[in-house]
Length: 332
Image 1 (cartoon, helix red, strand yellow):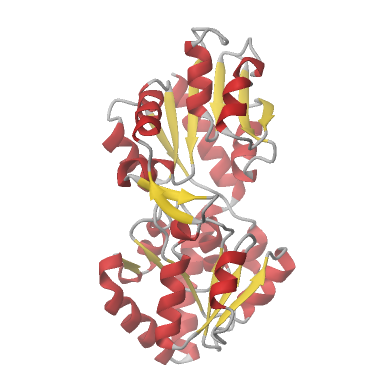
Image 2: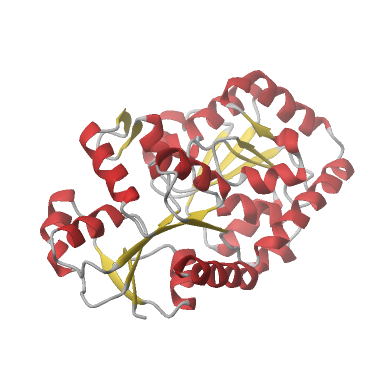
């Protein structure tokens, strides 16, 4: 059985590892305009039994419908982005204006039809599965999980400083919930360290505040440095599929607070249910963050051990093996 992984020119490393474990070939596409992608649909390699996609499933589906691909070919998509949430919420971040815009009705119909036309779906976490079922209850799905570099498990933050860490790239601050987190930190006057690229529009707006620190993209060494100086990870995402960066912080023994609209709430909730919040609970979020920083270092470290314990599940070998087994089940 021939499998082709259709992804970005630089695919998500987790998705690529999943594809490699089932011996899939790779075809990368450029992140060009919709018009260019439509024009190049005929260039999608032919002769494959399964097309494993990460985000471009609608165009692969359309290419199949238009006869560019074998009609018997099966399309399986990895849902690891905020797409399902955006379809249901009816709005999304505009990368041109850097603002939130209405989700196009035509695009929504196209996406829903394409989802219903999938052979199967790979959901990164149960959050994605639940969103999928609201859109297409009959679509076959499996649930798998992202993995983290096990090296983070060797680290232990001292949790002795009143600093919050956020790790995530832009420019979609809405999905990451970074706009919400910044306002929380300003109201509480707590230091926030933001690690990630393409966030210049937010940095320009908030750089005058001493509490908000944009430190840019960091390699693993840089991540570890800022983790060691942080005592709490916050990620109030809106539709974030999972949030592997939160898992990395947990692996380093840093407690995490997240929204109920991000997939990593599964892991956080197992350590502390009350560290998962609704956006309607802004006052409770502020209160809990304040209470956390009132704890002694010893109390924080005890809590950190619980989060580290939950993060151990997400080691690469285990997660890749789970994917391989469940993918084979999906094909059966």
